[in-house]
Every structure is written in C-alpha cells, then in structure tokens.
Length: 232
Image 1: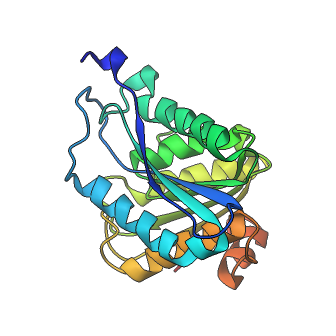
Image 2: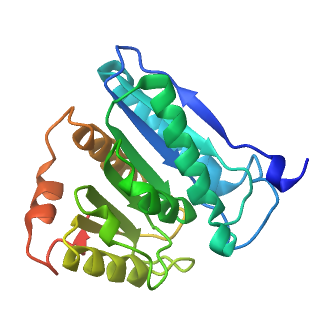
Image 3: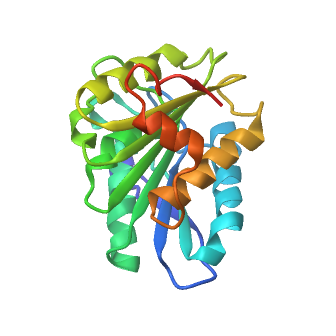
C-alpha cells in the first residue's frame, strides 16, 4: 500500500454513560518517516496508558476516548502528517457523536499536532505533554481555547525551553495558557501519577464536567510569566 493510500485509525474506549464529551489522544513520532508507527513504540505505549487512565476515571461521566493511529510515524515537513490525521480524527468524532466538547491531548509530535488542530470548532481545550513546538510554531489560532502544557525539566529529546517559548508567545497573543514542569525526561515515566492526574483533570474540566483544579486555575489566571513554569 502506498503512503497516499493509507488511512489513519482510531482506538476507542467507550463511555459507560450517555456521551457528554470526547478526549482525543495523539502520540509521539519522529521528524521524518513514511513508515507506519511501530505497534510497540514507547510513544504509542505511553499514550495508550494515559488514554486508559483517563477512561477509567471519566467513562462513567460520559467521556469517550480515542487514540489516533497515524498513517506514518513522521511529521514530514510541510506535509504535517500527524496534524492531518488529528484533523481527520476530529471529523470522525463529529460524525459519531455530533456536537459535543472535545479535549485534545498530545505528547511530543502529537503535542504539536493537537496544538495545530486546536482551532477546530469542537475543541474546547488542548493539553500538550512535552510538546514539540519549534520556533515560529503558530499560536494565534488558539485564542478562545484553554491550553495546558506540561514538560519534564530533564527532557533531552524535546528541550523544555521550546514549550516555554511557545507558552510565552501564546500568552502574548491572547491565548489562555498554563504551563507546568515536572521532574524527569521525555518518556513521562518519572512522576507518572502526576502526568496522568493532570491529563485526567484537564479532560474533565476542559469538557465542562468538573471545575478546574486549584493549581491549573491559578496558573491560567496568573499574569505572565507567572503561570507558565509552575512546578507540578
């Protein structure tokens, strides 16, 4: 099958109550590759674990969760393949569930993809985990959304300064943004409970099913640069 003929897919964990919101998860990848993601790639395994943690906590409250399965493992320059696949996923969610709030969650390359797609009309909030946000990555389209970022202070693959610079530019552009820092590196293995807890709470609050927890609410309300490098 050629790259052009491939289609993305969605791994679905269903809500156990009437659907009230949807969370879409996008895993990491690489700068350039037209090969399909490996089934046992750490980035996919870790995002699946986060999806499952959120589903356990939120399925009874009507939250459907979907994990995007990319056509290819790379971002691939102007093709921005992961971003295109997240846009496809949002269209699929609308077809299946209609007009419900959607929270996007992405790690690394997936963080870049969901931040790019944050202007979709269904999206209410975006959560970027160690997001790959190169200099010049667009920010103004995120006005009107709530953006919560988290980054490991010891990240050697995607330096934390990249999301810090992104958060500052987004805040200056009028985006409602908070950013947290955690111990550990890019794999989100250290302090795993804090990563999972933050994503769960962003999904619930971002979809209107719970109030924002105190630390996130405080960071969102703070005058920059406060609120953009809060230890979690």
